[in-house]
Amino acid sequence: MFKINKNKVLLSSFFALICSSYVFASNTSEKLAFNIKVAKPTFVLPQFSGPYREREASIAPDEYESAEKLRALLENENQYEALKVLESFYDIELSPAMLTLKAQIYFSMQKYDKAEALYLKVLARKPQLVRVHRDLGQLYLLQEKPKKAQKHFSKALSLGSNEAIVHGQLAYLNLTLNSPFSAISEYQQAMALQPNEIQWQQGLFSALSQAKMYPTAHALLAEMLVKNPNEIDLWLNKAVLSLNQNNNKEALISLEMAILLGDKDDGNLKTAAQLHLQLQSYDRAFELISRHVEKNSLNTHTLNEYLTWLDQVEMWQEASDLLKEIEPKIKGLSAKEQSMLFVQTANINSKRRKFNIAEDYYKKALDSDPSNGDALLKYALFSSDKKAHIQAELLYIRAESIPEFEKQALLGKAQLYLNMQNHAGALVQLQKAYSRYPELAALSEQIKVIQNIIRLKNKNQA
Image (cartoon, rainbow, N blue to C red):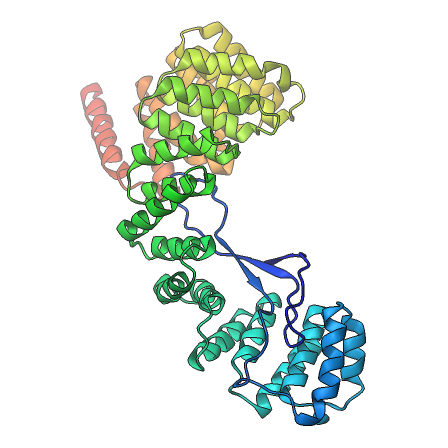
């Protein structure tokens, strides 16, 4: 999708109308383990940029008078009157230069079908016109016809165009349609012509990153950061690049720089917290989590992830503090969301050995959402640990009726029966699990062991 920035600028020539600008976004790669939201590299593409050179198109001698009239109209930004003059002639009467001007006016007035038809008519008469290929390529970009745009930009370059904008446009299309390797040389050409243009630097960085040419991409990014040390997106790109190289520590440093400079994206805060937990900087992790939880936009799924992470690193007091912080907001949540948080509260209190409070919250979770399979399984395990075997069995039976929790319920019930020395019951559950889930290949050995135990027990009894 292409976004249009309606910035009006002056016409530099009656042969070229400089009007709207277009901003095109290219994709940045994302690493599955962590998500960092980076603004996509962009570049600005003007529709027209200056008069035709004589070698490209020239007006016929009998068009000089009309040309002067058109020049005056366009200098006064009177496109409608200029178009009226051009439409008073049959297309066959006009030179390629005048036809192209007419097409440009249609383009600037967003009459894209008419502009396309005229550009193609001009190329049928003079297929070597560089600027027409360039303009037609931009029109196809605007119409989201990237393959046609790619064809005409390539043609413009093969005919001798050496404009940075055309190299950059083709690089973007090559990156989008083909491979990052096909984009690198074109971005380098654009940078050679406009070395300080940030859009070409961003595009080249994106291409190098996608091509996994990390050292080169890192060197380019370092140069960009020297010139723009306060640019948040550059630090985010550096974080992504570091993650791609499995350098979590450097990724976190870059992400923290982006946050320090003002980045407030929820996903980036979450990733920073996750990295801090992995690198055992727990205090900063909890600080970021608390900051995120304070935001009204935080959803329960993300909060549930935070609580799970804190549980995994045994930060149970911090998890409990977090739950207390969001307690006033719980009443406004749906029954399913409340149930999810009640399970977390129960789990945290169980880890803190506050068993009565934990049981109360397991019950609350199931009262809010009786189909909460996670609550059923955790409450069943909790009951099993308390030797409340009958209650645990009933909870596993309920969980087994929920398709996505059936496998865990069968295995949990088998373990419960083993704890109760009910080997026959455990064998039934394991055989049922193995027949329904063949991927549990390790169960075959467990089944044989239990069968041997049962045989031995029967033999002893006989």
